[in-house]
Image (tube, rainbow, N blue to C red; front, side, top):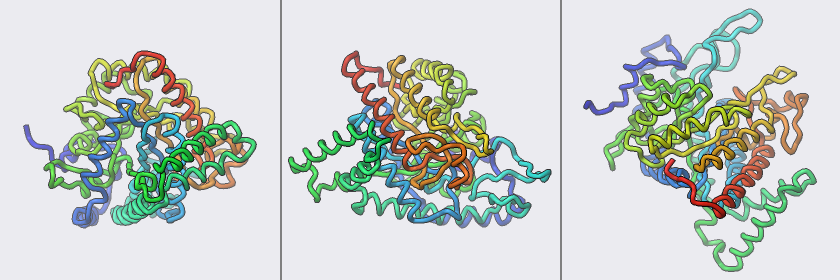
Length: 460
């Protein structure tokens, strides 16, 4: 058998990728990127895989969240900080609910490319190529802006490197101190509308007070002041991915150096396609989006293609069906996984199946629908006796008005006030934290079920 090479994807069919008109410039950019340092390292990817293996067994829980599509123009240190801050708050609440560690995985430092439902779009009778993310072209609706530009890959790399630099500083420099994170959470529960979450917040405070009194939470306790934070993105632009792929000197295996985890979208999961071929050969943890069109036969083939050694923590199945549709699709996929004896992490993406067009013309996602899909996801796993291993949200730490509902009661009429996304609508900070409290309720219920019944089947 011929050994896998990082260029093998070029022999496969490619979709959802730009056709660059200037091949000489493209080759020059790829050559330059190939000389740059990787953004992440093999040891970090292996650590994440080990943590995800725990999530597959119910010994940890995955929180994956961040921007729909990272923007060049909206890139700020404050924006990174605010999203990181909210993810820490969410993780603390989820940790308390699950009573297991939470694996923190940002959609950050690489989420620049987006698949589109059509290759072109029409505005006022003018048809132009679709916007595919800042790493490829520009949002402005002009012929020049929509031409794919290879140099944007270099800017994406620079921004990703800067993002990772700041995230690593926040993770280890005291900003992630557990006491500080909880003080932020307490601020959220002070209002009348958040009274239902105050009881859990008080119980977290009591737990921290006990740890302080026992000396477990002293100021010099490294575990209380630092966190492990990983980054992920959809591996859509394979020229960029290939250029940053390196051989790990320790293991001799290929590593996608663009992020700790990369995932395959629901539109690009063809078993004989370029994206599956690329992801099959790197050692990183791989995510696979599972939408309503995925059949058990599709999943069976992809399980063998992407994780032939059935390695725990290697493959995360990210279910995205839409509220009211989970029970129609998820049980059959769980059955396939069980029949194959496959090690996977089951993760719920409650965003992508719940996008609607509001009466005011904005794309939005109703908070109640997002919550309903999460609840259905947990309900199916309770019925099947399997492990709901994580959640996946498009969110931001900014006070945007892009998704309706939640504790702030964002209405259709509010959407135009702070609608800043370059692509799909995101939960704001308040909605994200509220959702964490509600997911924590599901985790408490699951934990109670485990304590009162036979052990759930963890080999899924």
